[in-house]
Image (tube, rainbow, N blue to C red; front, top):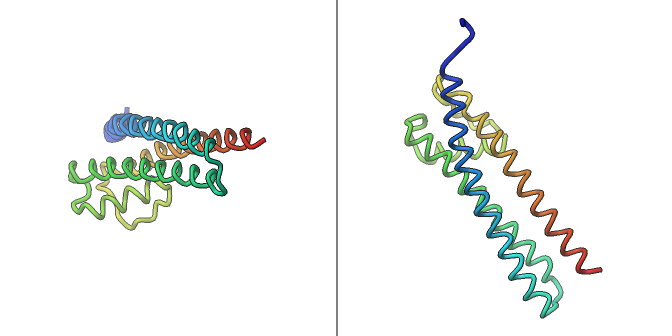
Length: 147
């Protein structure tokens, strides 16, 4: 097995654990979105005002941004605790660049771990898709109520 390289298996296992934590955090965040929507929407329906739909949407997006930010911080924490990136702010910046798939942070992981940023991007694409689906569902619900 000359092509087998343990570092990719190790990165995959670590990525699966970090992705699982990310999914749990995202699930909690999306539950907050659902609860906020139900509460805010019931209040907005009882007191219709211009812009109430927009304010509900802004609140939901804010919860989503905070949720994604916590996920970025979890990955950054791993980078620091594992000693892959020595400075906290650099780890956060690397994580943001990986999570958003920008990928151009100028920071590189040690050669043994260089694939981990791509695994973070893969997890993030799934989380962004989940957030997008949730936001679309909320907007559809708001529009159907308006009709």
